[in-house]
Image (cartoon, rainbow, N blue to C red; front, top):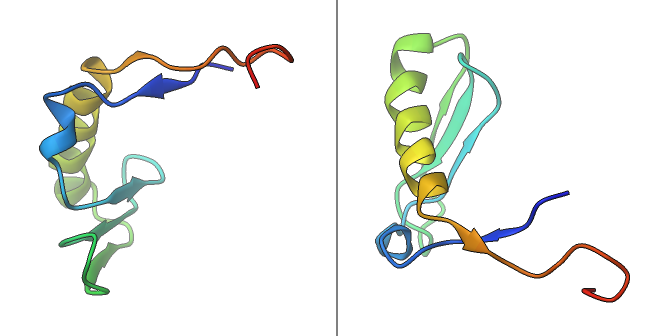
Length: 71
C-alpha cells in the first residue's frame, strides 16, 4: 500500500473528483457545495478528469509509512 500526500501544486484543487475507470466519473464543482456531475459511459468527458488526476498524483509526496509502526 502506498500513501501519498498532495503536493503544494495539487492543494489548490477545490473540486473533488472520483474516477472509476475510463468511462465513469463523479465530479463535484466545489468541496463546500453538494452539486456534482455524474458521468456514466462517457469516455470523452472522463479523459480530461483522468489527466488532471494524473497531474495531481504526480505532485504527491511520501505520506505516512503503511506499516504497523507507521500507523
